[in-house]
Image (cartoon, rainbow, N blue to C red; front, side):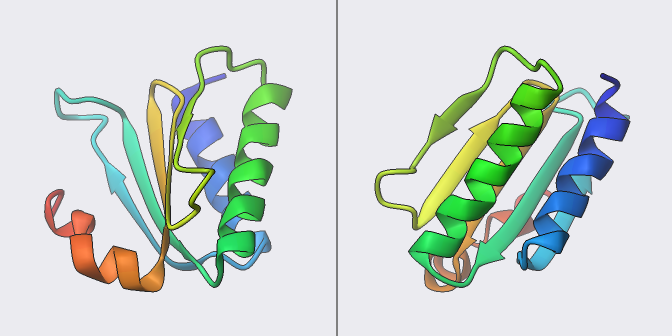
Length: 105
């Protein structure tokens, strides 16, 4: 699946499941680690895990094979890397502390 379409589907599933303060960064025209970075806040650990599970399910449905997931055990910062797209799901206080979106602006 083309990364632009996959990116749109991931952002839609995050929004449909209550992800807050969604920030996206388009790196497709720059040499980098991915085409897109998605940063979102979950309202609780359980909510963050649910968002991650929905995204992972979507990736698997689309036959994306190389999926790396980190942080599910603590759920304060979950990172999902599927090659062309990297998704960061934070709890609010952790997101405020690291402010990773400033790196990409």
